[in-house]
Length: 224
Image (tube, rainbow, N blue to C red; front, side, top):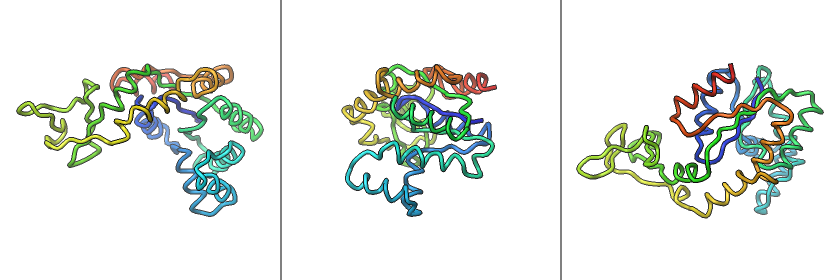
């Protein structure tokens, strides 16, 4: 099963991607990892990408797309794959689709986790980190995982740790808005790319508003 997954920052895309990966036993492929591996191995594409990255420039699609295709052709992808983090705009969607068609690689599903912009932003800014274990889920804007209260103080809902912090980038509204400007753009951004795929392949959309369990149950039911 070959799948693309989309969702704005704060939608739980990474969590749902991991659930889909486990359910269907396919590799979860992230473009950031592909870049790092190619650069580390010193591949020709990796060397070219590093040049752009070192200059603080975006890596062109003519380098990124072949990197992705090479990864999709590896042995562990023969039974399927879940691609996450690409494409980010309409031009990349077109480039990826054309490359997949040319290589006769069938894209079977596109998953779209739907969540409004304000809720997505709240969820990012609402994350709270437990000093004992950052993997303990706490979020002041999600009822199911709200931190507990003790003596009027917020504590970890999992272990009771009384030290809760935030990540600086989670509180950077300008950076969040910049990412969301790209994602929610229906003319040239990520949403334009999603709409492009809707004309070519089955797109499974799920409401990202409920809890993780409810979203995953709805998603897996639609995937069959």
